[in-house]
Structures are given as structure tokens and as C-alpha cells.
Image 1: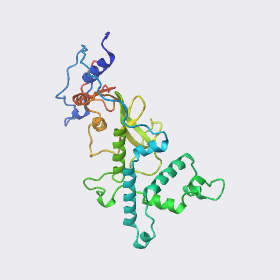
Image 2: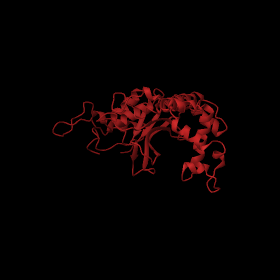
Image 3: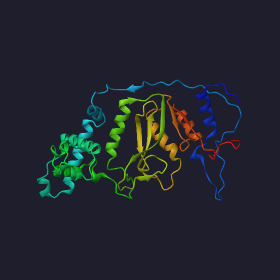
Image 4: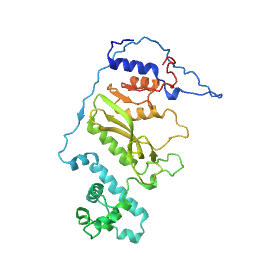
Length: 318
């Protein structure tokens, strides 16, 4: 069959006709699949729907600073650093004895900026142990850190660095428990800045990314087919033209004992800032479903993705 319509129009129409939502899938008691109430009859005719024009400004919303430090501080704002200062000192007071707290030098924003800088330097100049940066041996001694902060002070800031008030966090196993509760305020602040500082282009992509992590954490995932096989999995909405992260969501496991429609939920969560502007969002067959594409279109966003042939609603002819 030869198709003369615009390729993007055809892809959109075919994806809408062929895929079906995971949320609509159901199984009877004897294990057979139920027929979806919104299953669309298959046809060999391809029709074109009018494609709405993309209607949003694109690009940075602020003047881009010249130095890496100033760009970093666009995301770690004075308000963010002040929040970390308050919570770190609060945490120190919560766990110290009165005698220890009397000798405690409170952390301030200047300390935090220096500490974050030291963390970046340690990533660029890796040594076997953190203590090695303060060794007197010329083989290990690293003056940019050792001459600026004592090892004891560095350890103190590392120990008490905090982003939330522990007394207000729900306990593990209780209603409202958040596995990311200790860093949730920081994540939300950075998310807000990512959305505020840049207006994405027409074409966006949603996929999973891995943050390399070899330590111990219940959040750590193993994905053998990824370049980074072990780490923290993150769902990402990124601008297809430059890779800018518009929004991200850390994967913490199933939100309920049996979570259905995970792919659709992730896409909708990540796309909430772009509705109504007719962006084109692309994703793989883990996410794609007919109902998701229809839902996105009703919210002023186009979706396009590869489809799994065993999805409910996929035509037998294919």
C-alpha cells in the first residue's frame, strides 16, 4: 500500500488505531482476556486528522550566565541553599547531646557552597579514600581541598547534611511513607527550576535513565541491557534537540502492591508542564497504549511510540 500523506500524520493515526492501554487490559478468572469496551475496529484505510500547530516559545527564559558556577546556581538557588542550611542545623541539634551542640559550629550557605565544590573536585580527582585528600604524602595530598577545610569539619558537614525535617516524615510502613522523603524538598525545588528556566522545543522524548550507583540502597536497580547496569533508575522527559532534562521522576518501585498502567502514569506525570501546547512526545513500546495517546491528545499533546504486537487491541492481521 502506498501512502502519500504526511509521515507524521500517518504515524500518529496508525499508533492511535493499533495500540491499547495497559489500564484497559483485564483477565477473567479462567485466565482468558476480556474484550476492551473501547477497542477500535481495524481498517485498511488510513485517514488523516488535522495536526494542530505547536504553540509555545522555545529556549531559555533567562540570560545564560558565562561561568559554570553561575549556571549551577541557577538550579541551586539561594532559597534552596538556605533550606539545606536550616535543615542540616536542625538535624544536628536533634541528634547531638547538649554538650556536643554547645561546641557545634552551625553550617551556613558559604559552607554549603564550599562543600558542594569539594564534592565536585573529589569526583574529578578520585582517590581510594576520602581521608587520602588530607594525607601529608605528596602522592595523595590534594591542596585545593586540604588547604581549605579540615578533615574534621568536612566529616561534620557530611554527617549532618540534611534536606528535610525528620520529625515530620511518615514512618516506614505507615500511610504516606515516601521512600524519597529525606530529599523530596530538594528534588521538587530542582524540578521547579528545570521547568522554569527553559521552554522545550516541539519534539520531546520520554525514556528511562540510570544514575550510576554502587552503594547499598533499596532503590538500586539492575538493568543488564543498559550501558550503566546498576544504579538508580530515573524516568526522564528530555528535549530531543539538545537533551535538556525538563522533568524527571526517580523510580522507587511499585506505588501499590499491584500497579497497572505504569507506563501511562509515568508519561502523564512527566508531561504535566507541557499540556495544551501541542508538543510531540516520543516513547518506546513500554509506554505506548491507545488510551494514553488519546488521553494526551485530549490534553493538547501529541504522542508517538512503537507498539507491542501482543497488546490488547493490536490487529491480528499484523
